[in-house]
Length: 54
Image 1 (cartoon, rainbow, N blue to C red):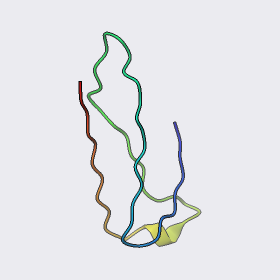
Image 2 (cartoon, helix red, strand yellow):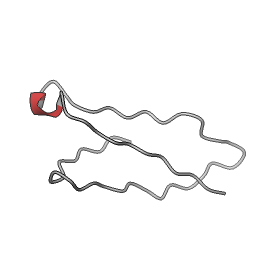
Image 3 (cartoon, one colour):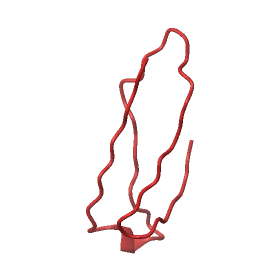
Image 4 (cartoon, rainbow, N blue to C red):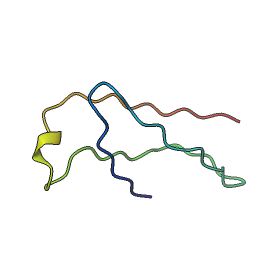
């Protein structure tokens, strides 16, 4: 899944919820920050968190 966002400074975005795949457990989340066509996204501090449940 690819999603693009541009929130105002000091705000954020929540993605989800996503249904679990029976018999599988997530062990890795891939997050890409920045892009070649958006050089302003580099050199900035970001906080990313992932939350899971049963």
